[in-house]
Length: 418
Ligand SMILES: [Zn+2]
Image 1 (cartoon, rainbow, N blue to C red):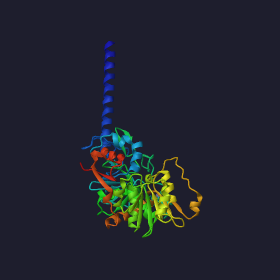
Image 2: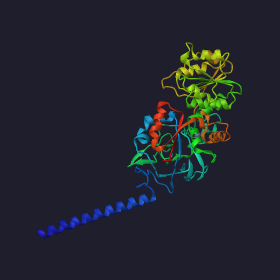
Image 3: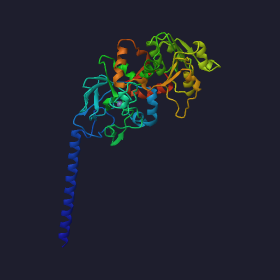
């Protein structure tokens, strides 16, 4: 009887053992199969991180950025919401293999070059040079169809989304934990996946290490002047705030043939640099006891023809509006104010035929308009080199952030080269 029990237990053990082995073998086969079709990314030749797919598609699509021009306006939000992804992870030589779907496209080395596109993408082809933009243009919504708006309903900037619109999924993960996208571009990586509506196809001859700065603040300032304020040749313009966006607004005024460009800033050390951007006169509000709008009105016989506000400070916004000439003056607000800021002015300032406007990304529709801005650079009308004060390799991205936070320089280009 004892023999029978022992034999039974032994057989049962063998049976369970074989079942477990078969199960493990099947799991191994499944993992190998998934790896083969691209569902998992199990190794990377250069990565210090293992990156896995959240999703699979017929053709693996890769995107690689060589040059990144970043802005304080975007990056300060990133510092707040997505620090882990970009600053806490050792991203040197980071490579993410990414899949694509319908609206996605890929890019590869030698600049922002499309390597392949997802099914259904017809506007772009492998080899195209593109600029990624934090806000998109679907070309189908009421905003995109309006000649007056660039505030696409579908692809307007959204710092909270963090996923692809099509399926609500992230295309990055580390150890099975999703990494969320940032403002639709996630460009602090060598490869990324973006919606086709968030990239602008540009002249392939344009140097990507220069025109990459057009993806954000430089276009914002430039467009605020050229597209919204629209100063005429020989007129006067006041620029509030002489950081990169303000200097881009001054560059727009210079291109428009403005004869007087008055720079307003609390930091006098910015005045010398601003001369390179065509600023002809300077006002430091600290040097005066009267409001700056009164000083400018005295300088210009009643007010400037146009003003562009690039600080986001509410008092500067009010001054920028009140310093324009009655009858025809136009003030354009560009800077983003504190969320509780309230704009106060006497209604008579409006009734006296001053106009107050606001703009987002300089009213440029990213896909429709950025190619022509690149052409402005190519035909030497627009000077981008003077905005680029630093260039650093990706391995020194934290140094680039330090430069930005200290306010040193205007734009730092991050290259993917070691
Ligand atoms: Zn749209």
